[in-house]
Image 1 (cartoon, rainbow, N blue to C red):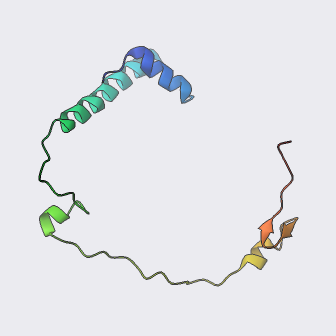
Image 2 (cartoon, one colour):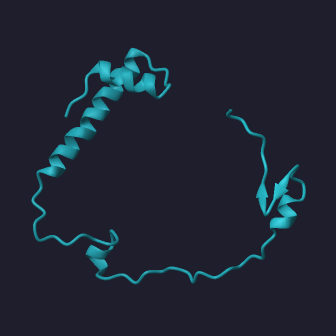
Length: 100
């Protein structure tokens, strides 16, 4: 896949980016380089290669997951947070209807 200068200008317009011609040409070269790299990576034969769970797993082997215990560490302060709110009901903030 390859982009054209009009594609880059359209992407910039849709992204609400102001881009002059010099920057658009630079972006075109860089984006086409990214797409070329993706095409090159698609051509690599990966049959028989197991996916890694972590980038270092290829070097260090199986890594233990270092996840913390799922424990509540703070008390529920909903009432204190909602005290300054203009309107609340059943623990929810009430806001005015915007769309009719």
